[in-house]
View 1 (tube, one colour):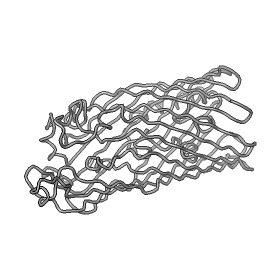
View 2: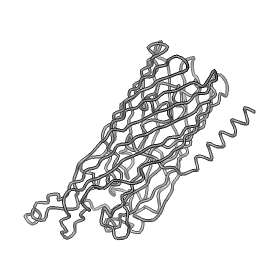
View 3: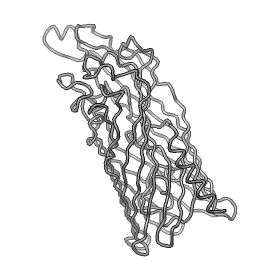
View 4: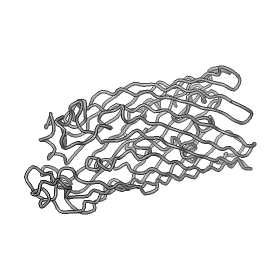
Length: 430
């Protein structure tokens, strides 16, 4: 009977990986954490196997024992932009509709599934399903004066199926590898006025939803350095994805949108049987993906969709995470965390980032777990608040008419991007 339950759960994970989901931006467009337990610690835990089943350090799964997880998350991203200054309406300029506009689509539901089976006392196999992150905006206005659409925005979502093998190489040291199957989809509306800048104007906007798949892997190590002190490291190389052919005139590289490489390292200190303090460092290399990192330069001769075509101009970021976990009496565990990242959006790149205002850099989190009776089953809760973030820049495609007549190309409009987000997740392990 136990084997039947395990096989059924694995089938559900695989089927679930085929379902499209909305996802959200936090560390750039990566999640601040994965799974309710890890999110309660603001994503800290590269060296803490207890909360790492969902996209954690693959080396830690061998210490988990047999475990199943089902989780559901509700998240509320709030995104808006403000355009200050009327369009100059000069020839060969592109003014933006002035005013403050909020993005719609403010509530989403996302499931998470995971399972870990012990193959023997030294090795384990896991299957997990989770959303990695993404970007979504839905502005009910013609931001770029697009006459062909009543709305402006994009929708990028990424889903991962992870299959992990974890093995002890010593009593308190382990290695792990995760094979990743990735599915992502994308759509865009309201960008017709950029057609003159694109090498494929018919593959720029309004082409419905396109999808792409890719395959990658992640490697991890976990080991005890001293009594109560554990080190964890994991690395995920860039994942090459199939191209979005319907949007070959928008994304650099003829519709390419690979997933950036990232590295995490952390320490976990168990001060005693009740208290654990976790500290993580994460590096996300957006510069390895041209469609994300290429800057928008109005003087460039490289059209949209070409190898050197404009992207979002995102910088590589460093992320710092701190989490505290307290194990109390009667099966209660309390968690709290804080995460801070560099700002990926440059002030000179706010024009394209109207479509993806991922400008939050600070997160506060709390969470708790409660064991259910005398069994190994437990319920877990996490609350994540992405503090308001903002970036102010200018519209590089519109200029002050008076100054332009004098030969001074002074920007005519300012662009302010804002975002905050609230997440709530509940999960069950058994």
